[in-house]
Image (spheres, one colour):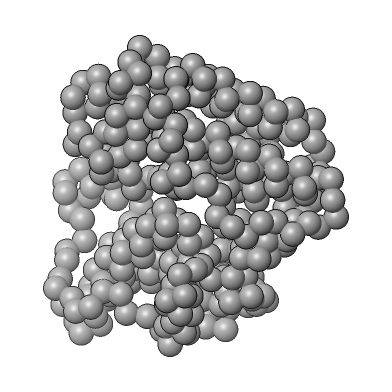
Length: 326
């Protein structure tokens, strides 16, 4: 093994582990509602992935697909080596992370003024903030070859059609998840997780917040959206004493009102802007992705909780929890 090969082998392992670290940290940031900090960590994970791919190709570990499949079947993944610290960053990345640390010290997310759109060169992993350059200053890749981590896409990139379909699906999924469970089972926290009733009441609260924001965006010119966090699960404990039929009726009524507001909207309407102190000017589409992402995470949690109640299995809860966006 040459000196260059040894260095590339070290880079491959270091960058691969670093990518995993940043990706997991990004998921945790989303769970804690630090969405701009999550976007920074996701961009940083992309930098690591691109650099790991570079090293892997230089080592000759990438061949034609048939050969790659044969290697996979034979268990011939790239040889690993011991590395030092695996999350090494550039000076610019450290500057961005220091901005995040300062915001977290104040108990808040980065604002759109503190962290602009981020772009990562898909060829060399060069990271830039603000405007994507015409060409990568490091390797010459054209602007179309950059991966983007834009503020406006921070909540997701679902289309308006998909957002409405996902919200409609909730009307079928939520009642199905509680079917056959007793009031006592629905009011009891599951292995440290919230109770079913907590989550269903919480989903209704969030639906109401989204609908209020959507109405403001549609009916007023670039309104200021509330900067206060929507109700958290801690505020949903009160729903444990409410009969499940009443909770389901509240959820269904709220969701139907939301769908009545959204159905038939033009693409221009979905692009109407509201001003958020953290995320800046955001379209209705941004907020739609936010509520769908949030609800989908909790529906996964509810499904796993139902399975564990019925079958007495708890081992998958930690995995499911990682998927949540509280």
